[in-house]
Image (cartoon, rainbow, N blue to C red; front, side):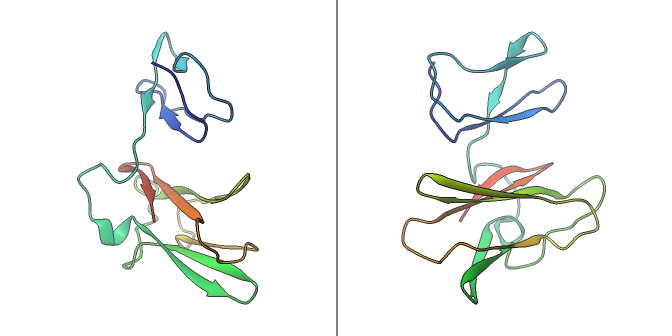
Length: 126
């Protein structure tokens, strides 16, 4: 099994997450086993609390996770929000207690991909 750029993998033992920057001929491994590919929008969870919502804000965008705000508790929160704009990637790390949103100085345009990662329900894409 080969990897593709921008894929996200998680170790089922220690929880480490990696994002592929350059495609390879084998999947990443951690703790002596192959890491699990995190496929976007596939976990059985409330879409309205996980799918990123993008709003134009001045010359950039504001990304809110969910049309209904996602919980930001220590045991259930959004770990990061990522904006992929062609060859450019912007990512914001969140912590429990913070609002599930981030502002990016990226213009709204066709092809913009926005992803968010929930520590319980995995990877979500707009």
